[in-house]
Length: 58
Image 1 (cartoon, rainbow, N blue to C red):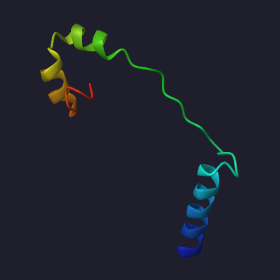
Image 2: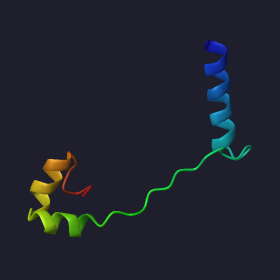
Image 3: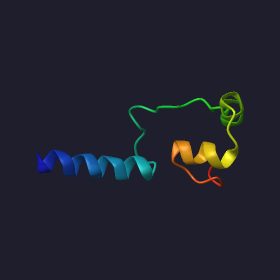
C-alpha cells in the first residue's frame, strides 16, 4: 500500500507542476450566500456563526 500511496503523491506533484493534467476536475457553482442568509432572516454575524465561518470569510 505504501508504494501506491507514494505513487499517488508523486502524481499529485506532477499535476500541480503542470507536467500532467488532472484526471478529473470538479467544479462547484457559486452560491448566493447573501440571498440564502436573507431568506432565513439572519444577520451576517449570526449566519456566519451558524455555518462555522468568520463574518469576514462570509
